[in-house]
Image 1 (tube, rainbow, N blue to C red):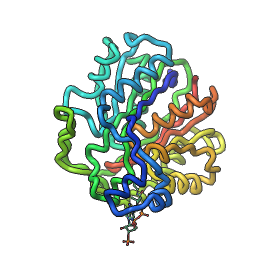
Image 2 (image 1 turned 90 degrees about the vertical axis):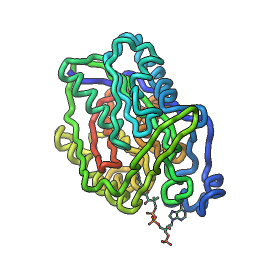
Image 3 (image 1 turned 120 degrees about the horizontal axis):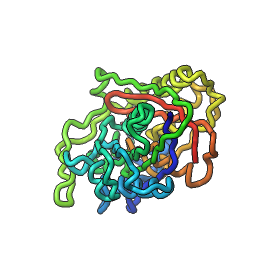
Length: 320
Ligand code: UT7
C-alpha cells in the first residue's frame, strides 16, 4: 500500500511586496536581492491567517481529489507560525472544511515541515490506519520577520499549500530524513505569540547565520537526494522533477550542479513568493500540477531543509 497525491492546492495573500519597497525600509537594493537570492517579490498577509490560507489550499486539494470532506481520515498541518498555540491549526482547518471524521494535528519542523508531514502521512497509509490524508504547509512568516534586519527580511514570504494523499495498491518508496539539534543556533525564533485580535503580537524574531545555513543546505540537500535514491535503488536520471524547498535560487542551482543534473529539472517559483518555509514545496507542487507540467507516472523528489537543523527527501510517483 502506498499514498498517491490526487489533489493539490495553494493560497497566497493578495498583497505583493516587491524588492524596491523593501529597499525603502532597509539598506538593500532590488539588484542585491535578485543576485544573491533570486527573490523578486513576496506576499504579505493582511487579513489572511495561517488557518484561512491552509483551509483554502486544503479545500482546493480536496476538490481536485474528488472526495468529500467526510472521507478525510487525517489532517496534518506543517507550520512554525500558527495563529494560536491551541487549538492546533489542523483542527481549525477541519472545522472550516467540515472534515468531521479526521484526526488533526500540527507539525513544526520549520522549512522541513511539509516534507516530514508527507513522510508521516505515508507511514499512516502504509500501516493501513488511514486512507485519505490532507497535508498542508501554511506560514505567516511576516509576523516573525525582523523588518529591520536586511540579512533576513528580504528572504521570507507568507502562503500555504496542500496535498491530498490517498491510499492505493503500489510500491511504497522509502523516505530519508535527518535532524541535528546541535546546529540549531544557526536559525532560531525563540518565542512567538501568534495572532491576537487581528494583530501579530511578536515576542521575538527570526535570527539567522545566513552563510552557515547556506553552506548546510548546499551540502545536505544533494546528500539527502543521493541517500533517498540509494534507498530506493534509483539513479538521478530516473527522476523527472526535483522539487526543492524554495529558499534561495543559488542553493537550488548548487544542488543541481552537485547532482550533475540539468537545472531545468529543478523548477523554481521563489522569485514570486520568497521563502515560505513549510509552504514552499506544496505551493510549487500545486503550480506544476495546475500548469500541466507533471505527467502521470513521472518520478519526483521532494527535498526539504531548515531550522532544527533538519533535512530530508522523498521519492514519489505522480498520480494525477
Ligand atoms: O529555509 C532556510 C532558511 N534560510 C536560508 O536558506 C538562507 C541561506 N542563506 C542565504 O540565502 C544567504 O546567506 C543570504 C541571502 C541570507 C545572504 O547572502 P550572502 O551571499 O551569504 O551574504 P553575506 O551574509 O555573506 O553578506 C555579504 C555582504 C555583507 O557585507 P560585508 O560584510 O561584505 O560588507 C552583508 O552585510 O552583504 C551584506 N548584506 C546585504 N547587502 C545588501 C547582507 N544582506 C544584505 C542586503 N542588502 N539585504
